[in-house]
Image 1: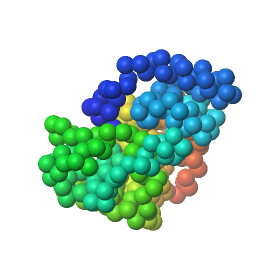
Image 2: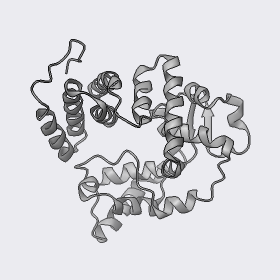
Image 3: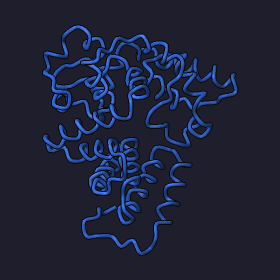
Image 4: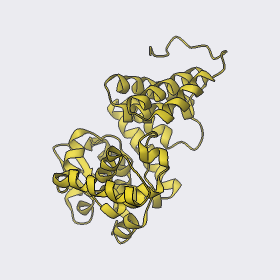
Length: 274
């Protein structure tokens, strides 16, 4: 999610974010679910400032996730408050792929979304889909982030895989190899070792730019698909990214796993410098 996307989605409710975070922190502490304020702040943004949803998601997390010692799950749990808000949404069949593709996107560039969903920019302005998606200056964002969580939970595996494949092709047409590799990996039904190099290289660049969350996501995905030499590097990058984010339980596990990769896994000439 880019800075632009953060701003578009949050403008209606972030002015009071500090008060919201303080109130929820106090409520969770008094309920025996102590949660780090920075974790709550992240949930407030991801859940459109919905206090009930933030409390329910916090309760569904592990103690290590609440304390910030482990990364939040890539897809937040579907809790009753989110389900209640979204279950009545009218996402027409012809709009479902577009909205799902938007929910699965890790880039807010409008053109790949239009290519993937075979839509024009004008299509996004018509009644129905405009209730779920905003577009401006070549960028897009979902009107509610909770819609993304809900739709990813209720979509069938076939729908999700199809959307990832369409996004992969769209980004590859644009020459966005790292993002294409991400969607190829996420849409795969079995291990996809050929994406590991692109994902690991992108993760290394993201980590070096200080984007620990995205570096962790790319490196973790690479490790799921990689053969031994690339897997060692992916785990190492994921571990150092987790440490940069303050998630030391994850960092310890991943760095330990990276050392456990068999010694005979000899690096190839195209593996990245770490």
